[in-house]
Structures are given as structure tokens and as C-alpha cells.
Length: 374
Image (cartoon, rainbow, N blue to C red; front, side):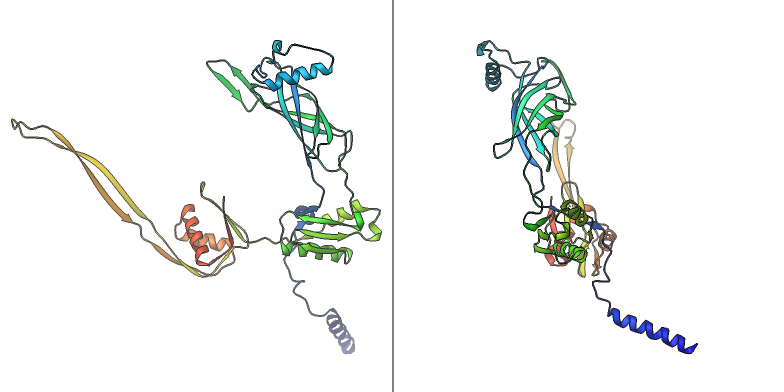
């Protein structure tokens, strides 16, 4: 029996020796964020499209005759249909010139539909009830990638006359749901030259390195952090024909992103937001205030009876200065946001007082965080 237990003990010792010492990387905070949430495949993005068109069918709420571009656009459109009209005889109150804007998502194919927005560029009062006539949508390179047409939905109205007017929302801007038809796709080749890049949403050295380590631990030595905002990922031969599955597997890997300690201050509203990594050194804080009150009163000087004098008033000012008792508090070194907040609250500081205290701490070198005013 003793020999059996001796053998078990030796087995445990040899196993621990084979495992080696526990490294610092093993004892770490649990990961909780997908790579998909902190980075994206470089080059996969939306593209902006714009166009110029006309909205017809308005109930007298379109552009006036002062909008020369609207009149000229109507004449040009009718001429393309073989109709010749006198420009001076046109009435454009049922037509409005609009600028069309849309976003072309990545990987859309010809025939897919997208939403477009129509915005009045003249003096139209409302686009409600109007219909956009076929309008080409171009990208920055000048190529047409979609065409738009359809009824405009404004979600608001404008009613009234010269005496009074009632308006809800913005009736001069409308949405054409699925009103754009894609005519050309944006070329993009995933995994060209056997690799692709991941672009971090917030560039950071530590986060980029952790992404590369997570991919390497799962697929081998295929990832390298080129800079704080880019991680190059190679495509193994086994995934050459399944790039979508490969990228999807990488996006599901979880890491612990790192952020710079930051304090966000909005002085207009007195709002303060501190990140989890904010820390302070031991520092003494005195918080107090000086209140000066100036009051102005009028005194009446009444002359005696039968003295021949006049009743006069004289202004009198009173100045009072009152300084509140200052509380001197020593804030210990801490790495907890809760401790910082509790310590500042303990001196009775208001949000605006805390803003001043945090700025003074930063100037004294006791607050280790970036301070951003918005």
C-alpha cells in the first residue's frame, strides 16, 4: 500500500515538473471582447453616392420661379423626351430640385436595393407626397453605381399661411426606402496575395499585439502586428478556398483590448466620465469656496416739517464676503475609479468642483490619465 502511494506521489511530481512553471501570461484577466468588435477587414467599407434630381407631384409646396436651376432642369428633362417648352411660361410650384445621397455597402451586387435620402436645395416648403424621377447616383470617381426613383416619405408636415405656420419635423428632407437600385459593384478581392489586413477601430500597440497573439495561438504563425492600427494576417493553404470561414473564425476569437486611461469632461453639463484604468498618486486636496454678496438698497431722507426741504432717496450698497470652511483631505494612491469618486464625494465636492480638482491633479502630476474636454 505504501509503495502504491509512493508511486502516485512521484507521478504527480513528474507531471508538475513536465508542465514547468506557471507563466505570467497564464494568470491574466478573462478575455471578453471579440476581434470583430475592435477591428475590421481593411478595405471593407461603405461608399458614399450623390446625385441631383427632381421631385414631382407636390401640392404647391415646390420651388418658386426664383429657383432658376429648377426651371432649367425641367426644361432639360422635357427636351430629352422631345417636348419643347417656353422657359418663361413654366410654373415650378409642384416640382422641387433635390440632392440625393446614399451609402453603398460593401459586397452589394447589381440588382440589390439601397435606401436614399432626398434633400431640397431650393425654396420648397415640403417634399411630402412627391415622387423622385430616375436619378443616377455617382461616387467620388464619377462613375454611376446606382439609380434612384420612388415616392418620398418625409415623416413630417408644414401647414399654414402668411399669418401663422405649423411645422412638424423637417418636411424638406425625405427618405425613399429601397429606392436605389445598384447597377455596379465595387471590386474587392479578399485575401489578395495570400494575406489581408485587420484595421483596428482604435489604434493601440497593446491591442494590436494581443490580436496577433490570439490569431497565432489558434492558426499558427500567420499574424503580425505591423503598427498600432494594422495587423497583417496570412491565409494558410487549408483555408485558401474558404476565406469567408477563415475570416469568420478570426472574428470570433476573443481578446482583452487595452485602452489609454482617459477622463472625459463636459463643462457645459458638469458631466465627468472616467475610464477603468484611471489612477492617482497620493495627493492632498482642499476644497472650499468664497462667496461675495453685494446688496443694494435705497434709503429715504425725510426733512422736518415746515423746513422747506425735499424728500430725497440715496442708494446704499452692502458688501458681504463669506468663505466656506475648507476641507483638507489626503487621497491615497489608488487604481480604482470607485475610490477616486468616493474620496472626492467625501469632501462634499459638486461635479463642477470635481472638474476643477481633476484639472489641478493633472497639473500637479498626480492624475495619470488623459484629460479630454468636450
